[in-house]
Image (cartoon, rainbow, N blue to C red; front, side):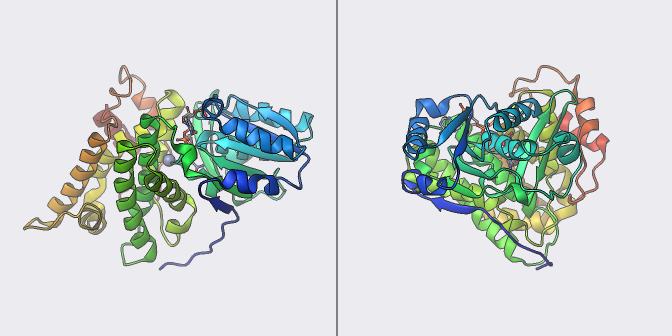
Length: 388
Ligand code: NZQ
Ligand code: ZN
């Protein structure tokens, strides 16, 4: 194992009924709670009523912050920050998926920070030397793992940039994770979220070191789990075993554990962020299009790991194959799984009409230093063109 420092300050309450059991106690010390949510799914599935009843019974002043969109914008963050300041909010409760959780973390900074939060915390990375508003989350969709880290991906529409930063001070104080809350997630979002989890694990696994290490061992077990559990959740959306595993796999992928001692790549995420800044494509769906194409570009530089991936994740036997053939068989298995679960294979499948924007998107992508292969903007463009 390479050297590392590990801390994760989020306290997790996991399992059926956890909101009913623990939320009241967790908000006890706060008078005014911002209840933040997305486009309204929580009103249809009953989660809104459940949470609001608990807050009202506890006598909280509840300030609602609704309409958080998929891929929250900086403008929405500023709206939340204004609302928090005007109402003297002293804790933020985010109820939703990654978009709501990310937006709440950004609001927690912007609400107490005097300067321009975008410029100082997203445009560049910073050390947070003040206390953001405390955030707690109730997770309603599995995938991003945002509940267990300080990460927030925010879109600056004006600058056409989407940037994610992980600030430990923004880790939620608590995460309430009731897997049955995810029963109502539509199949499309279930598979997109599940693939996002798989992508987080792969983007970490396919990077140095390649010597035996605990992080890669855990990653392999998690990847096999996500594949198994997604298949089961598609068969039966109310399969508690599958939903609970997917929820915890998502958190395990992004609670920093499997990143310990790893260089980490995240090239596909960097490309996805910029595709998302220019289009309204779904995060997990874009990642599904990008991964096989990107891996065909880099596997020769990371052959030992790609060989391990084929054997240990997809159970492909060597059967006379050389290393490159084995690696390719692993990538083919990944592409086959993407088709099997109904995710798109091309940008056209995602509704992209022409190649006109691809060069601008490629040129605006950040290049990761963790990739097995040194990428260039030109190669990113080739990848995007192949994805088209
Ligand atoms: O907005 P509502 O009405 O709530 O509906 C949402 C939304 O339409 C719906 N949904 C959520 N829970 C539901 C439900 N529908 C029915 N029943 C439920 N229980 O699902 C749709 C997608 O929700 P969203 O939160 O946008 O999806 P996801 O969890 O995939 O989050 C995506 C965002 O997270 C960021 C992405 O960039 C994107 O902005 N990410 C955050 C990361 C982090 N903080 O660590 C890492 C990720 O790589 C990712 O970049
Ligand atoms: Zn992701």
